[in-house]
Image: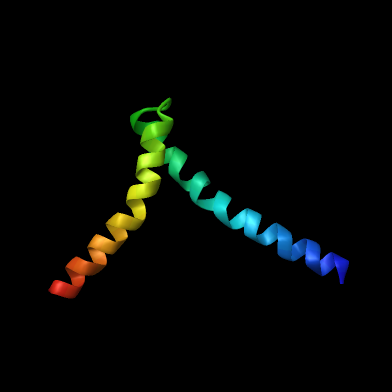
Length: 59
């Protein structure tokens, strides 16, 4: 049972790192050394998704 608990603890820690691994390549193409921009893009991604869904709903 302890082994199963370890797996459950590791999975959530892996999930948040995946978005961070996806964003840096897009940031490196424009400005490699701008953590604020990467943070802004990370925050804007859900907003863009929401706006896209709202726009599709209006059509």
